[in-house]
Length: 126
Image (cartoon, rainbow, N blue to C red; front, side, top):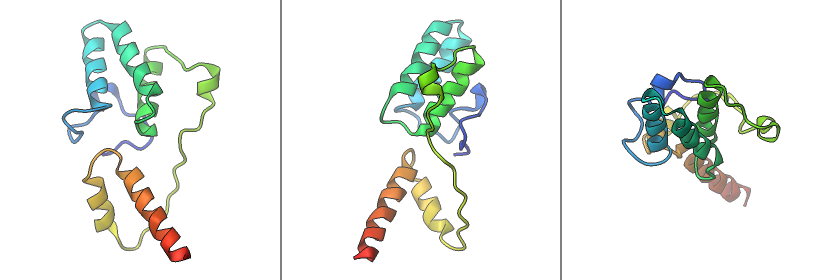
């Protein structure tokens, strides 16, 4: 999935490689359809719902806020100053096949790989 910063255009998110159903994909697809049908309020409600869910990745929250801002809805001051994540570039000489295998498991793969790496780090630390 190409999304990293939550700044894709409305017609590109979710992309063709997104899961066919489930959260938050259903909400993004429904919101796009509602907006296209002229039901702006329902699209806003769906995107705001994504921003409040604890079970979605921060990239989805960022993407929902991108869409909300595009139609003139800004987060309140408290939410606007939240940092939802930090991108760190770490070169990996080998192991691209491992990253690809995790990525193929779908939404949440970063969380799963992080959990597995933490377990391995604890084991190495003794």
